[in-house]
Amino acid sequence: MTDTIVITGCSRGIGLELAHQYERAGWRVYATCRQPETAYELNDVARGSGGRVTVHPLDVANAAHVAALAEVVGSTPIDVLFNNAGVYGPDDQELGALDVEEWLHTFRINAIGPIKIIEALLGNVARGRRKMIASMTSKMGSMADNGSGGSYIYRSSKAALNAGMKSVAVDLRPRGITVLTLHPGWVKTEMGGPGALITTAECVTRLRGILDRATLSDSGKFFQSDGAEVPW
Image (tube, rainbow, N blue to C red; front, side):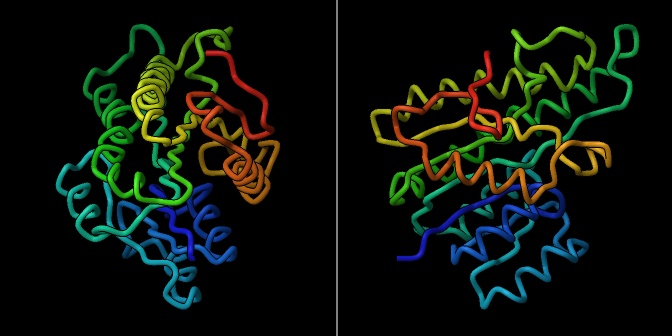
């Protein structure tokens, strides 16, 4: 039986590599991004996949987009739902320069969007064989790890995501659904920059290993890509 994954934020970086690696492993991949018409590399992956990869428009902050994706997926069982889409927010996130509208926009994408995706596709995940939900977060959302301050908008949005995912893990444990929160590490992406420590391929290989090893006993945990747990 072919495993199925839904991945948000696939136009570049980690999301694109997730789609590529799962396609190569023979999975059925629903790959989403905000503007499929300009996601040239993702469309190349889809064209070379023999139909295993399909590309779908999704702005995670747009309720109509979320509903449309759920309609496309239909009753298909989902083995892994991977919430990867996210933004850093405005460049200036220091005290005295915080823009409320930018803050709310970042929250809608980073913290609220993933939970609404889970709501929309929960029945599909419950019918899946692996029954797994993962959301990409950041150590910058960790209270214990914050020793440098600043980045108020991004940090708070990821902290909110972490809290939401913890609640999802508690609520879905009785249904046998494993829920993980993941920190990718410092990755050579548009956000991470060229000086980052690992490539997207290395990052995704590590993350896939975590998902492959995880069981229901790991549900609710916050892992970094090397498998170590991150303090809340």
